[in-house]
Length: 261
Image (cartoon, rainbow, N blue to C red; front, side, top):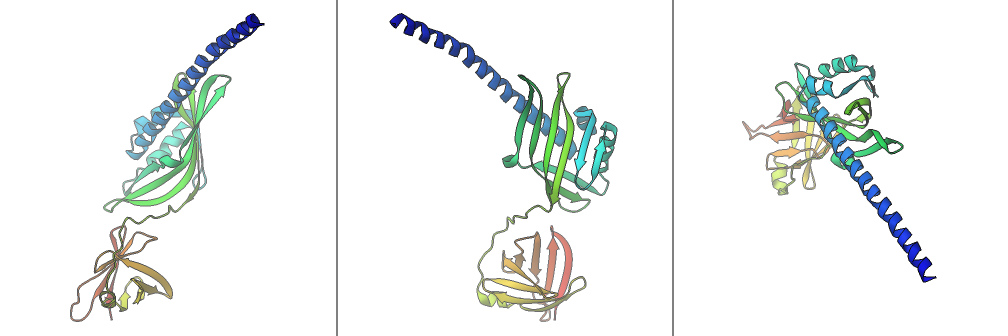
């Protein structure tokens, strides 16, 4: 009986010894594949952000297919390259950023052989009009299919969908001002673009009424205020002849100057 137990345990040990290293090797291969796919994908998007068509072209499959919920379907490498070149216009530049916390890589296998990978997540797009600062333009979900062809990873299918505005997160810091300071900026202002704007005090901040619509603006300094849901700032000028100007900027670009009445 003891001999049988010994033989059984020895047999178990041999089986585990054979299987366990294989499992480790397989896991190691999968980890390496994920790293390579992530690096290749990052290289492609680096080419996209710098308008490097040589890099992009070297990583695109001849039979690539792009499915875009706003731009429709693009079939084939030639059409894809033409589309990419159209994004590097003379009057703007586009920059794509994948949000690391959302990105997932799923390997595709035929039995034990890795033949592809799907990268999915959320990406955001930043727009830089010529002569203007960069601004966050929107975001979408994506699924990119990479296939291993002839020892090289190629981008074969792209799905970009659920496009919409990206949630704005203000990096400005609100301060508290005495009510008498806030009171200085109350009144009616008239601008060429927005018409009548009425400013009043609302607690620790100002309330801006435009066309019957209320907007809360928060103090960053004594004369500079900002919106929390959009990249808008409102600067009140010093008084000149008893009047102030309300200077409105979006993405740091001037959009309105309104004169106090």
